[in-house]
Length: 484
Image 1 (cartoon, helix red, strand yellow):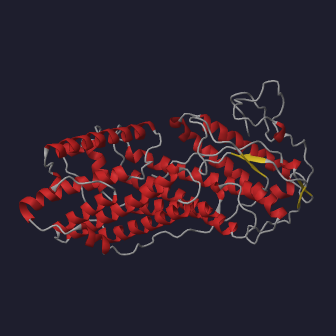
Image 2 (image 1 turned 60 degrees about the vertical axis):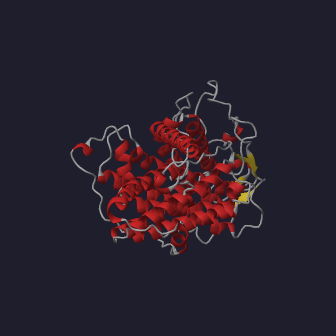
Image 3 (image 1 turned 120 degrees about the horizontal axis):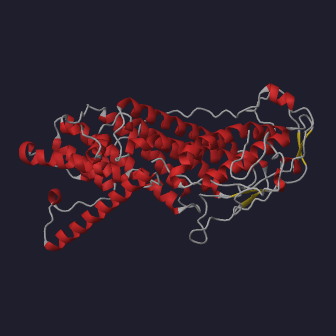
């Protein structure tokens, strides 16, 4: 958690081949220049091994931020929007329909195992803008994963409290920035008359992505003050020796409030699932949404249980923990986990081995920085609930001896969720006045970026292409491009 998006790739494109700008003649060339940097950065990012992609993520996000003002300027020149208030009037004329290609990553699966899905041809600047913005939002989500990754490592010393709070705050900001982008696209899509060329950027998918980002940000607000995942992680961390001389600190949490926040996250995940479940969307993504809903509801059950246990109702607290396990799809074996007959004992042993294997595989993913958290935190939440269950059941069997209520009535009395985040309006980036003024001059070179090969199999520009690379100030050398 958050979702491990696969970023799309795009073809090369020369804006001058389809657009002309009477007011700022150099705008199409400059847009092509920055788009070329985005394309090359995306391809370079995709070709890196997973463990090496994280350091390159900031460069990718920076290139997208640099390109967007030029794309929005072209868009405003074609069709003025109320949210675009450029200091100068921009006039853009469409010469011919653009031919831009994007490779979708959510709406289709590879036709052949190990092969990427085919590229999609876009003939509208509007939908090229949609693909660019959703790429930025997905990159911001990956950035939030990068911030959170150190919190889940068991092969290094545990992070301190301050570092943990900073990481969660930074990850939350990235997710809310992504939600703001999706919110803008959702509103903008209401005025479009033509159908989208791909389900990746269809209105239901955009709204689902907004709900997903909001759900994940809400759960991070809970994680910031939730001590139990860190305690479970501490027990598995071989580099953590604090337990030898100090028992873990378990502060009193605002359990009832956290439970309602988790229910709000579950409602957002349910909305996202309902929006895309009937569309042709990647099955792994749909499963993640369902897993996120289950995890959020299980967390809510755990906090209701903690609230009951703090109030002296340990039996009710255990009932809530069992309700949480049910939300996660975990079957309990007999009373307090007793195995019963020999057949049940064998089944319990197999389930235990499978659980242990799953946990080790997830720990390996975290260690290698691969697609960890693809189960939306279900395994982590199960570990926390089972830790509390083991402790409380022992206490209740020997000291409290309180009856444990059935699960059904507990789930039926769940309240509604409570929101904590407000999505701020996305402000389209504008070009600085001095940059716009400079583009009133005619272009100083031809816009030939779109003439270069766009095949994914190319690994570098041929060395015979000497001289300045269009859109850059230096030479383009194979393997180490100098973009600036």
